[in-house]
Length: 146
Image (cartoon, rainbow, N blue to C red; front, side):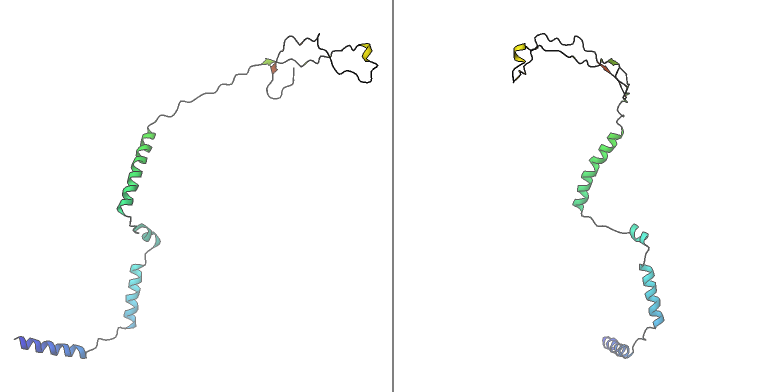
């Protein structure tokens, strides 16, 4: 029985070797090519939504270690009440200002020094008295001096 099956296998092999498959038609070839391109040609949105990015596990763990405390901080800051509102009150205070007085004093120069070529520039302030009281008035927004 073994010899009979081997003989059939040899005959079958010889027959298959002599037969050549028919050449594919150009229409069939173009249909298969078009079908392949349509299947693999996806829209940009679909490619974007179905894209894959491989990230190593240690990097994912590091990102989680950073993201979790930041998220916790953001959630805790959400519950903090806003600071109290500070109201500003403007109060106008008028302060009186007296115009500056120019004080002119005459100094007496001895008659002996009048005829000299070089007059003395010294002035003695023995009898000088300062103004008694100084009153100040500040006016806002460019008002005139009163």
